[in-house]
Image 1 (tube, rainbow, N blue to C red):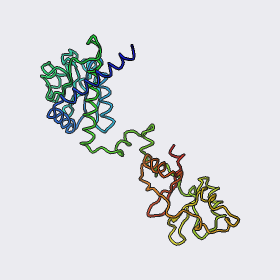
Image 2 (image 1 turned 30 degrees about the vertical axis):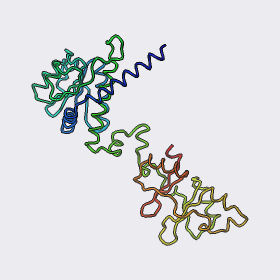
Image 3 (image 1 turned 90 degrees about the vertical axis):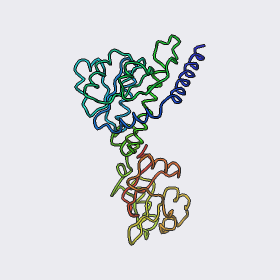
Image 4 (image 1 turned 120 degrees about the vertical axis):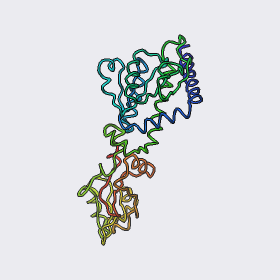
Length: 312
């Protein structure tokens, strides 16, 4: 019984999102995105109750993609925080009914200093909608709550609409993964958006040997550096021409292996990475190629090495 109720709620919210997709007006949505794009100050978002919680999340999303944004609680605004709003800002006000009394002073102040108001509401003829320069309508009377009291589908639609604005703005600003890294230096996302040049082993930690050396010397270099491989350098220009791994040693195992020249058992033209390669791209390449080590090169000369464990 409870499981079927849960499924019904999901179905209702999907229905609400489909209605949102069909009913959203292209002209109003594009006008809202352009307004946000042209804002030289902050994007301020406000709402009371559940709308406030959703607004706070939308504000956080906007900030994370390079659009300066704050959430302004309407009650705090009524007690001095209106001073946070400047003429360079724009504001998004969220109210399902469009009649939240807590927003009244915010509306009046924004009208007074002439900053654009973007409203998210289900009531086109509400006070909020009438005072807005741009209206983004969400479907009404489709709450999953059977009592039509607890905000459910309406908050889902508002959240999705906020995401739609944020991603449209991201694309319009041509925001890149490199820009994202600057704002997310910590956590898993931050690490995956690092460049391999930031985490590679360098200088004396790189296992390297000249092409005129024999395998016994290569094994000593490989063992001392602990990378499970050694790069082979051209004698003349010190360019990377090959790699010898633990697997190569096993494949070429013979009585005279140690006396062989390194070029006899090396893998020629190994996969390399530029120091500007993002760590997540390096991880994908190493997984696809089933390799655990990769040399970082600049003009064919090795400047570092990265191991799969360094990433993980």
